[in-house]
Amino acid sequence: MRRGISIVVLVGVVAVFLVAVSWVGFSRGGNTDAGRVFAGELYAVTEGSFGVTVPASGELAAKEQINIHNLLESDAVIIGLVDEGSLVSKSDVLVTFNDETIKNSIRQSELNVTEAKNALDTSKSNLVIAGKQRDSDLAAKQLAIDLADLALSAWKEGEDVARRQQLQLAVQTAEKDYSRLHKKYESSLMLFEKKFLSKDELDRDEIALLNSEATLKKAELDVKVYENYTFKQQKQKKNSDLRQAIDELDRAKDRHVSLVSNLEATVAAKQNRLDSQISKLEKTNGQLKACVLKSPAQGMVIYATSMGNRRDEGEPLKIGKQMRRNELVMTIPDTTNMIARAKVNEALSGLVSFGQRATVICDAYPDEVFSGEVLSVGVLAEGGGWRDPNRRDYTVEIKIDNPDDVALKPSMRCSAEIYVEQVDKVLFVPIHAIHRSGAVVWVWTQDGSGYSQKEIMIGRFSEAYAEIVSGLGLGDVVLLREPLPSQVIGRLSLDGEQ
Image 1 (cartoon, rainbow, N blue to C red):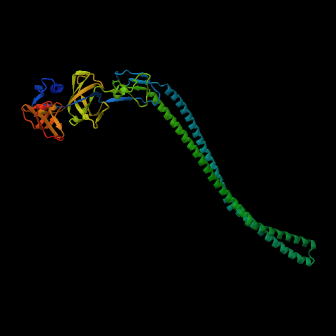
Image 2: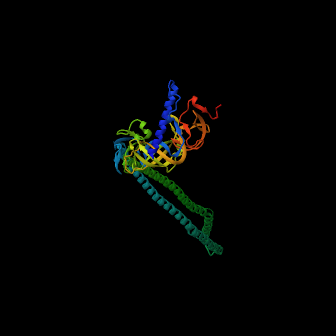
């Protein structure tokens, strides 16, 4: 198929060249062939077939590849590096970074972890001691409450009752004694008046009566004092002792809650610090492992500085180079599954779709023609940059079949032709014979000794030929260039022309 396409392209190029030569001769004047039309500048409309293909160019890439990034956060200086283009196996060392600073950080982190662990153990011990002290203090305070409550109950049910009975007994005893002595004194008076009792005996009976009266009054006074003062005082004292014991328990609880809460917060803070130091140590150990980058799979090594627009970044990848964090170091492409990333002009991109057949030729292997299949067409067009700001291209990915295992590598330049369709049994003319003015499509057709514009309608087209839907018949002759003014027989009435 490629040979047929190449012949078509060659014919077109020759025709354009002949047109250019004749036009240059006319413009320079003095050429005897200025008004002459060469046979290669004319084309008779024929019926046949042609293939619709879309040209593309780009470079090879691996369909799948592993990107190797620098995982160090700082001081990533390369001290060991595998050669670019090397074939590596899984777990082979690719890059080694300087690890002296990280090892120092690990030693310091280990010390910090030990200190944090000791501080945590101390705070936990303090918390345990405080808990035991709290339990002991609260038990003592509770015991004081129990004792005060027992004392209050003992006083109410024992001491107070016994005291009241004692006072009542004293009053009753004093009353009986006073009554007995009073009767005796009265009897002694009668005996004294009858001269049966001496004055001294009477006086002794009177003194005994007075003493018993004083004892009675004292017993009655003790009852009043107890009821009005002693009882109330003891009652308030016992109740106060109980309330103070209860209040002291509450205050002790509050003190210990505050103390234990502070110690628990201290333990939590020490635990967080220990966790932080352990995490930092683990992270630093991870950074130490990241000082040695190993291949996760088999493949070929390609430096990031050799890929795409990174070629212009200056210093290539080498020993002693310092890498940025997360910077791409190299890739390991799967060279057994290659694709072509080719650019297709915006005007032709609509003809390309998934699954279309294609052929790919690499500049490195000009004699090898690889068959392929369109995998995807870019969604957005890319500009042509400062070299051609008006150019718009779409990226097309083409899967390459490589049954002979040719050593294809990423970034190899390549060209491709995408087969859109085969147009069979139609009238067609070379694409450069066709002109357009607004919505009108026309050609220059042979009209006697000159040429006239003729409106046509075209259908499918390729880079070389276009299908004639109407306006031309089999055998009509069209001019493949602009005729000289003296050769123009007739013109169409085109938009913008008088």
